[in-house]
Amino acid sequence: MWHNNEEEGEEEETFGQTSRASAASSTGVSTAIFEIRVEGRALGASDSSTFMNIQRSTLPMGKIIHEVVFDIPREHYEVYTHLTRLVLLKQELFYDYRTGPPHYAHLYQDTIRWIHDYPYERLKRGAELNDGPQMLEFCLRHFADCEIPWEEQTYSATDFIEMLQDLAGDYGVSLIKRPHGKRRRIKHHTPVLQQRALAACAWINFTSYFDRPYGGSLYAVLNGLPMYAAACYANLAASGDFLPTIVIRIANWLGTLKTRYPGVDIRTTPRLCELKHIWLAWDAYWERCIKRQIAECSKVHAARNVYGCDGCDIRAMHKNAFRACSGNCHPETKPHYCSRVCQEKH
Ligand SMILES: [Zn+2]
Ligand SMILES: [Zn+2]
Image: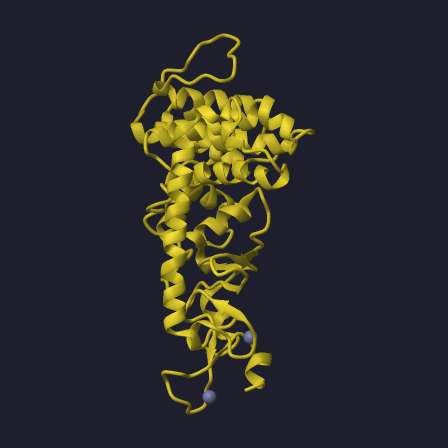
C-alpha cells in the first residue's frame, strides 16, 4: 500500500500499527471490516490517506476486493487484549449500517472507557445484579474474549442468549426454551439497549451455527435452530427499523446459499420466507450498494488517471491510494501508479 503524498516509511511513523484482513472470509471479523469499507469509513483518524482499498475490476458493476487495510491509532493499539475485536463487535451490533458509529476514534475511546470503568469483576457483579447496560457489556466482552481473566469459568452460548433475551424483553421473543421460564427484572433498561441486545442475540446465534459440527449444511439452515434464530432476531431488529451491520451480514450469508446450492432460493423456504423485514432490509441494502457503485464509477470515470494505475489494471477507490508521477506532466492527466514496479515502466 502506498500513499502518493508521503515518503515510504512515514506511514508507519504516522499511523502506528496496521491491521490487514482478507475480505474473502464468510464469517468472523474480516467481514465486519469489509462492511466498514462498504460504508466508506476509516478507523481512527481522519478520512485522508489513512485508508485505502485497491481493487481489480471484474464486471462493470462488480468488484473483487483484494485487501482491506486500516490503521488503528497507535495509542489504542491493543492496550487491552482483543480490544479491536470488541470495538468491531460494537460497530457491528450497536449502530445502524446506514449511519455507522459517530466516529471510530470515539468508538475506541468509549470502549476503552467501559473497560477502564468496569474491570471484569465489577462488570460481572453488575451483570449478576441485572444492570442492563452492564449485562450487555458482559456478554460482548465474552464474545470478543476481551479482558476475561483466564481462570474465569466458561459460559455456554445459552447463558448469554438467556441474558440477551431478557434484555430484548419487550419484544416478547423466546426461541429457546427456558427451563424455569423466569425472566430477570432489568435495571436501567432503555429501547436502545433492547435493540442492541436483539442484534447481539442475532450475532451469537449466527456465530454458534458455525461452531456446530454440522455447521455449513443446508439441512442445518433449513431445520436447525441457530441460523433460524439468528435470522429471527435480525428480522425483529429490522422490524423496528434498526439495521446494524449484523442484520445485513446474516441476510448476505443466507443469500450466498443460492450460489452454493443451485436452485435454492432461501427467501422462499418455509420458515425463512416469513421473515419479511430482513428481506426488505436486504433489498434496500442492495439498492444502496448499486447507487453507490454507480456514483463511484462516474467519479472514477471522470478522473481515470487518478483512480486507475497507469502501469496495470488495478483501480483505487480513494484518490490518495496511488502515487502520482513526480515528473512535470500536466496535472489534469498526470499518471498515477499502484506500485514502484508500475512507476518504473513510465
Ligand atoms: Zn499498477
Ligand atoms: Zn509524468
